[in-house]
Image (tube, rainbow, N blue to C red):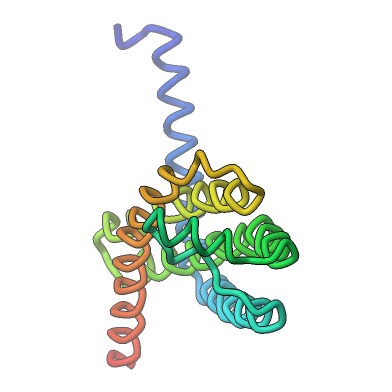
Length: 177
């Protein structure tokens, strides 16, 4: 069994994957990448505010109740729905990648317990999936409303601990200096 070529081949692949993931983790935890992902997150946060101010609408990103989401989308003008959908399909795709990389890098840099990086790792795909449902909703496909009511609380269930872990890590690092 231990000499099975297929098994040996899969072990080499697994070893390569583990090595690359560890290398990616070290890169994300580097000071330069943390600075870039933090700055990118801040810039995009401001851009969300600017777009909402210019087109006078509230994001549905934090809404999780079906009745509230449906009423909000119905109350938006066609232009507001279009702008919101485009912003979700562009800026709100880059945003979880940036904050997710920052949270993940901070967890890996400031803590020895790798499991603390898990919320940062899980929030990104959930946030991206939520974005897809939002674009569909904003384009009139209300049959995904139930999915949005699940994905938004799930996103926050990962986002808030990931944020807290990153903040605690930053505070501890600042105190140690």
